[in-house]
Amino acid sequence: MELAGQALLDAQLDLWQNTFAYVKSMALKSAIDLRIAETIQHHGGGATLFQIATRAMVPPAKIPCLSRLMRVLTATGVFNAQKTRSGISSCEQLFYSLTPMSCLLVGSRNQAPITTMLLQSTLVSSLFELGGWLRRELPEPCMFHLRNDHTLWELADSDPKFNALFNNGMNSDTEFIMDIVVNEFGEVFHGVDSLIDVAGGHGAAAHAIMKAFPHLKCSVLDLDHVVADAPNDTNVHYIAGNMFETVPPASMIFLKWVLHDWGDEECVKILKNCKEAIPPRDKGGKVVIIDIVIGAGQSDKQRKEMQVVFDLFIMFINGIERDENQWKKIFFEAGFRDYKITPVLGVRSIIEVYP
Ligand SMILES: C[S@@+](CC[C@H](N)C(=O)[O-])C[C@H]1O[C@@H](n2cnc3c(N)ncnc32)[C@H](O)[C@@H]1O
Ligand SMILES: O=c1cc(-c2ccc(O)cc2)oc2c(O)c(O)ccc12
Image (cartoon, rainbow, N blue to C red; front, side, top):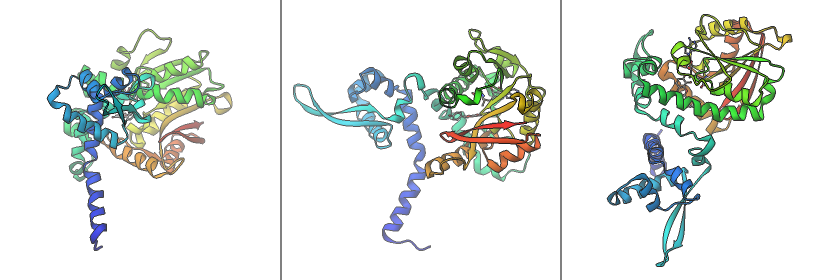
């Protein structure tokens, strides 16, 4: 392909957009670190540069740099900026406000904890290993292990700060998505009287389900050290155990963001244990999975791109996002007979699996 003129410059622009994508990520991270969305909300939905600088403790000499950061965050749709005349001099100044994206950095649907977790250095730096990791023969450590000398789960177990960052991040995601699941797709839980949230962490999903359906008896199964730190002020019942060994009985088994951590063989093992835990289909038994199904649902470019980017991202812990055929294969190998994919959670789907 011989490019010339404008096409050549457009190609360079594409290259730069991909090369500098991380600068946008770091601008977003700094907006969270400096609590800019909270400052805008604190000032009634519109804040000046000076107000943002004051609450973020940015010294006067750095205000021009902060202004340049705000220019990027406005250009990339994180914030809006509007010119307004104010004060005695009636000079023009910018008022920054929230966009739908930055509304997710404040309030009850706050996604700042998961965004902070995703943009911290142990995770981001793992992806520096991608090229080298691809050249290594199997079996070998995942990118996270190569970079940090521990698996993610080992680090969570040994480093309380990392553990808190990870659990708070996962909790904020769970609260966000479960609010939609129970309010808009609550029929998934109809006819169910007991549920085990397998590998449910600190129980944010079980808590949301119990709040919406108080008759439902909800338990969380997770590893000893996770259950040891679980909150004790809820009606959720916590069970310390290993999903590869056994899953306690219930009419429904719930798995959110769990199977994408594991290869097919491990998933089949987990799903077989889930199948043993539930009654037959005509007695209401089913497994409900919240995960990505690549290619399911609206196939707009942005959604499809996010699904495959997420798949590459989760490779950092040897995880995988699956398409329908890949899911089908593990369901049938685990002995299930039927499944239904409802692709209604943005890039994620609700998958109901029947014995
Ligand atoms: C990505 S987190 C998902 C947590 C939760 N489902 C959510 O969406 O917030 C994966 C969870 O799997 C748990 N886990 C890993 N190995 C496990 C095992 N063998 N048995 C039970 N839980 C396990 C981890 O402790 C962690 O809480
Ligand atoms: O490192 C992660 C990140 C996530 C994740 C990303 C985006 C969200 O909105 C929620 C969660 O999920 C993970 C996960 O499920 C896992 O088992 C390991 C690592 C991560």
